[in-house]
Length: 311
Length: 250
Ligand SMILES: Nc1ncnc2c1ncn2[C@@H]1O[C@H](COP(=O)(O)OP(=O)(O)O)[C@@H](O)[C@H]1O
Ligand SMILES: [Mg+2]
Image (cartoon, rainbow over all chains, first blue to last red; front, side, top):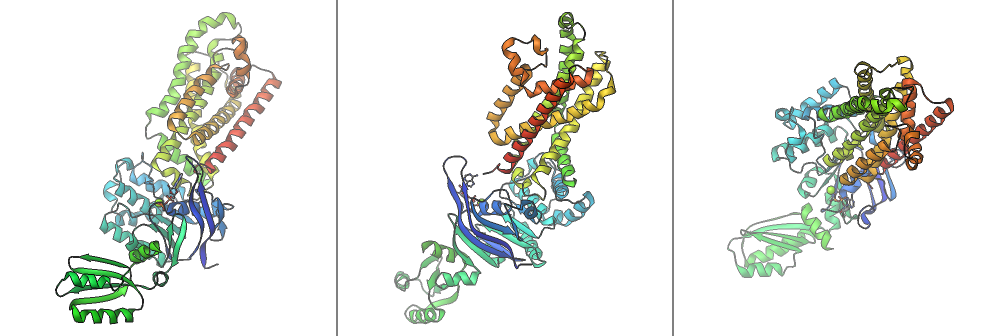
């Protein structure tokens, strides 16, 4: 059993229908390991959903290769589908049926019996708080509730791979937290999760490894630590002056931070270089302009992302 | 087979959420049968010396049942695409043909139910002398007839995609195929310019076969070639429908 459950090699997808040709995915290569939570990150239009659609056999790639558990998505699509469940970005529900019938039908279409489906759905109905709307037609649900129905479906089946395309969009925060925890739990039990998101915080707390995409191409990939290295060892320096002073801010800028933001007296800089070097610099600086407090950390994903874009 | 049944069940649940529409598929042909069957009977009794018009018309009405059940089924593709469930369905763990056959299975049963209603109306309201000796052949061609039109309309729906364009196409096809055929009149009573296209219309072949199994006209040779023609039509439609289902999002 290879360690890499998903292998994508120089994958390309060109949309040809409609106006013009749009290259949505361009020479993309990455691999996902069994049991990990892998992030596909990037702004709107980066090509994340297209990758998910190719991997879940909805779209055929225009070039390159994609293997899911060793099966080629073009040559063995059925074997691929037997291994996955997908929450796609569309609010896909059976609009004419009740929420319960949505869950039931999904179970039946995944090969479970009625009683098996009922047993499996139970805990997810509670988790996603669907009990009050169970008899309601899905058509009348808000976007957030439709999302919950989709997530409940994908979590209740036992496929080794789970695709989540911006699955938490529109969910209320409490339910979102509970859902992310459940996803983490399933991953710990060996389920491989591939999630796409524009919310870097979400990826940061959830994903072991990730790929940053832009315009269909890879911008960077790896663990958060590896991405930090790639982005010239970015650090985040956070400080507050004892007494604010216009000159202080000016000479802080002269130290050459890559990013600098100030809000309500709190200054956050993204800098590149060694932590030692920056501790020395700030210490020297604080002799002239005393500081109330000062912290230095690895940069967060959002900062890395901005930096990689600038490069 | 489990997935074919699950897909049939899905089609059943979705089509019957609004029972008025599918009822329409079944009721309209019965109304046609009762109205035209009874009124045209007087006109034609002179010309069609050896047969009552309602008995002649019955085969056409049965074909109409299979045709409209199949046509209306194809509209669920648009609903599924609009709700987004269509994409998701394509990621479920079964072959695309299971999806096609599952939906077809429901439509076939539904056609049979509609046809049963027509046969009962013909027998007990119009008092058409029906013998049910050839019922197996009739059932066979009702099922194959539904299959042909179902795959044909699935292909059309998936390749046209635009709802309005599809609606226009099906409405025109409905009129053209129905009237340029021997549904209402025998082929040799049609205007000469229409006879040739009507002869090459798959619905004519289907009607002739259904007629053959309701009261037995036609030669062995004619039935064989019409059977072959319709089976080829159904096979090609099946192939096209699967092909467009597989490339439906590119
Ligand atoms: N069905 C389609 N037809 C044509 N272009 C498309 C289609 N779907 C997506 N695109 C285009 O492909 C690019 C990538 O889209 P997508 O994969 O949805 O990105 P993301 O999920 O990262 O927002 C975008 O430029 C988008 O406009
Ligand atoms: Mg997307």
